[in-house]
Image (cartoon, rainbow, N blue to C red; front, side):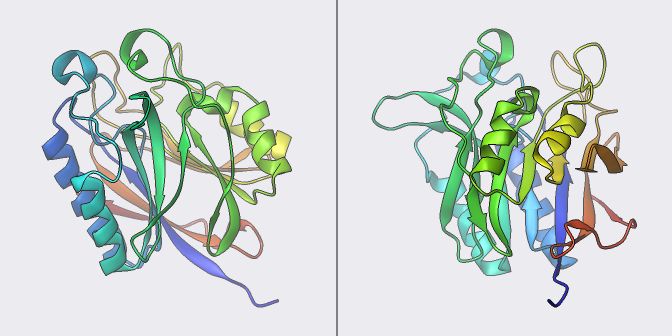
Length: 260
């Protein structure tokens, strides 16, 4: 079997709380820069479009049912650049008016091919605007047959990644806003890779929010319970890795760091 590799961009961004328009421009610029260096998968951190603590400042009326005008813009950008984008964006379910913390998968033809709604939402504080998702279904994302998507604390429940594996997932991706410290990651990502036997890409964020400091937060690549890469920056950057799809391992331990 011939070896197949792909270039993956982790958008390790510092969104400004409640600055939706500014954060959208940052995401668009980062997607374009990632595509310029040959990335074909581009992953955003959790709530990159609004910051983690946005609701007290701007409420939730701006969240509409997809595809809203800006998500449509990202779909067109993905099609023009011929990339796959894992886009974290709050979602309003049109029939029930329920709000979810969601990652949308946008394909190189500009279509939304699937989504994952965060299951382990916090029902108080900065996440009390969102309702928990009720399913974990892997999504076909070429060149990988099925990908399981986690959102931050979804990694705390082994049953979620195990469900992805039992449904044929070959790779896990996590969009995260997980600051280090007392409530920071304590081996959850490593355990996900151990219980499933699957590699995991984590795209975390950086910068300061209203209540949390993410400047030392790490984006990571994990396999078999071991971190292959741990990447951090105090300001917005793009980390680009080379992934061997055939071997399910890094094609090289080297990575690119692209300033924004």
